[in-house]
Image (cartoon, rainbow over all chains, first blue to last red; front, side):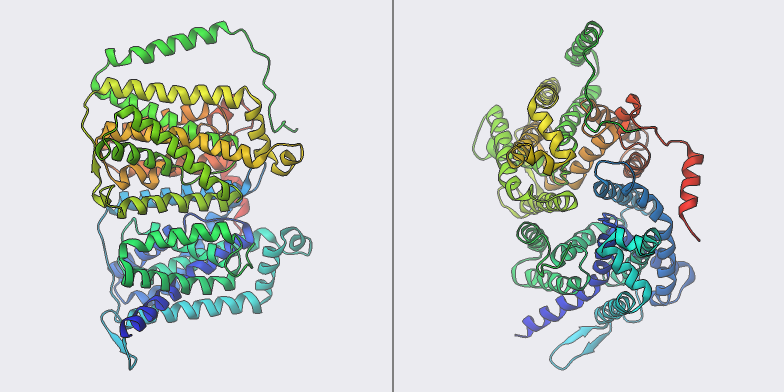
Length: 290
Length: 334
C-alpha cells in the first residue's frame, strides 16, 4: 500500500512538470498548426543554459528562471518568422513543411549540443536537492515537489492569461478560426509569434527543473519529445485543458509501469498507448481536440 | 503565374543520348568492384543502399504525400527477420530476404489500414510512435538479443554485398519508374497527394491505393534491412532501428526533391558523400547532424522543390542571402 501511494505521488509529481511543456506545445498546434519536433531541444537548451549560468555566475539555478524565460522567449521570437515562412506560402502541405522544418531545427540543435559539449552527463544542484518533505504517510523529495508546484503555478498563470486577458482571447480566437480572427482585427502573425515565443520560454524554463531533477546531456531532448507528443495526442491536439489530464496520466503510467512491471517497458507502454489513442480517438481521450 | 500541380511530361526527346548515358552508367556500376579498393566498394554499397531506401520512402512520402516518420521500422524489421531466420531457424540468406520483404509489406498493410486514415501531422506522429514502439520491442525481446543485439553468420565478401544491394536498389528504381511514373497507379497516388477528397470523388479507391503504396514502400526497406544485417553481421536496436535511419530517408528525399524520380538518388548520393567526407576528416563526429539539420532547414525555407526542383527551375529559388535577410527583418517586430 505504501509502495502504491509512493508510486502514485511520484507519478503525479512528474506529470505536473510535464504539463508545462505540453501546454505550450498544444497551443502551438492549436494556433499555428505547428507540430514542433524541437520541443525536446528547448528543454535540453534550457537545462544547459541553467548549467552554464550557475557555472559562471554562481547562485542557485532557481534564481535564473525568469532570466531563462526571457532568453528563450527572445529566441522563440527570432525563430518564429522562419517557421512562419515554412508553414505558409505556395507549398503542397504547409503543416508538413512546418513539421519537417522543426525536425531540421531539432537535428541542428541536438548535433550542435553534441558537437560543442559532447556526451558528458552534467548536473546542477539547488538548495532543495537532497532535502525531503514529510507528509505523514510518506516522504517526498523536496525538488520533485518544487517541480510540481512550479508546474501547477505556471499552468494556472498561463490559463489565467489565456482565459482572462484580451490577448488570451485573441489567441483562442486565432486557434478557433484563423481567417475570422484576422477579419475581426486580430494580428494573426503577431499572435503566432507571441505563442511560439511563450512556448519556447516556458519549455526552456521547465528544462531548468528537469535538468536539476535528473541530469543534463545533449541527447536528453528525445525523451521529452516523446512526452510532449504523448501528452498532446492524448489530450487532443490543441486542446489545452486536456493537457492537464494527459500530463498526470503520463506521470502515472511512467511511474506505475516502472515500479510494477519494469523500467524497460515504460517507453513501449507510452508509444503503444499513443499509437492506439491516435487510431481510436484522434481527437484525444476527452474528444475535444482539433 | 500558376504552375500546374501535376506536370504533364513533355513528349520524349530523342532517346539516344539518354540510352548511351544509361548504358555507360550501368557498365560503370557493374565494373566498379573490379576497379576500386575495398574501402570504396563499401562506400558505393552504402550509397546504393541509401538510394534504395530513400526512393522507397519517396513512394509514400513524396508521391502520396503521407510523411511516414517511422519508415526505419521496416528496415529494422527486415534486419531482425533475416537475422533470426538465419541464426535461429537456419534459413538460407535468400529465403531470409524474401520473408523479410514480404513480412515488412504485410506489416505495413496491416498497420496501414488504421493508420492511413490519419492525415498530415497525425499520420507522421502515429508512424513515428509505431517505429519507436518496434525499437522498444527489439530492445526487450529475448530472441533479438535485447539491447545487446545479435550476431549473424559472418560472410566477408564485399563484392557480393555490393552486387546484391545494386540489384535491389535498381529494382526499387525500376519499380518506381514503371508503377509510379508510367502507369495509372502513379497518377492515383498524385491525385491523393493533391486532393484526396477529389480523388475519392472521381472514383479512386483511395484506401486501397494508399495501402498498396504503403506496403510497396515497406517491402524494399525490409529486403534492404536483411542485406544490411548480413553485411554488418552484428546488429542491435540502435544500429538498425535507430531514429537516424528514418531521419536520413526523409532528409535525402527532401534534399533531392519530394515526389520526383531522380530526387532520392541525388539526395542519397549527396548526403552520403558529405557524411563520409566529414567522417574521413574528423573521424567519429556529431558534426554531420548539424549539417543535416541545417540542410533540412534551408531546403524547406528556400528550395521546397529540392535539387531537382532547382534544376528544372520550377520555382524561383530564394537563395539570395540579402533578400532572405530583408525578409526576416521585416517579420521580426521588436
